[in-house]
Length: 107
Length: 114
Image (cartoon, rainbow over all chains, first blue to last red; front, side, top):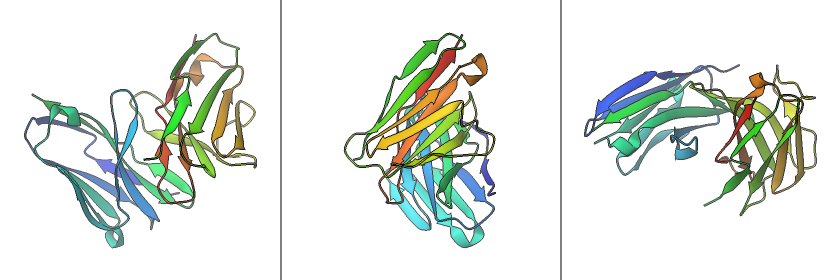
């Protein structure tokens, strides 16, 4: 099956700092999504990005499908950005999740 | 936007009892629903995929007789954990799709088996 690897596994930022999260995948995929899981467990879809670049406020994402990776950029981080960030790839009819990046933003 | 609900949000039960978790798509018809399990500090693992009116397809290692999935309508899927044991304690999350690529996730159900 497909392997989805995220890095770094943990990240601590000072409020206001920028960060880049990475997602590597081992095979061609139909689509890729980035999620934020809040402290209550709710998964919030951030980007649906099979290729190219998208921006939404302080967040942006880039997927280079030919090189099998995606990046999530968080700029001017806020404490409310804390939580777990997952990338998930659609492989066949299934969504396969990476292990996640735990982000903690300190004030 | 599309909304998926789960009920209950939290349940505590005794070992040996069965627990039913409901997943509903509130404003769209879900042709496919997925059930995931998430252990503390771990990622989401797909348990099974169900299409309305069909038997669920279970992932390798998931006991279909223990985790009964019913997708009887286009807006409702249920997961029943039969004869629950403490090792079944986990966070269960459903996802629903209406045929488009994007799926929508429910808020999750935290199951604790004593």
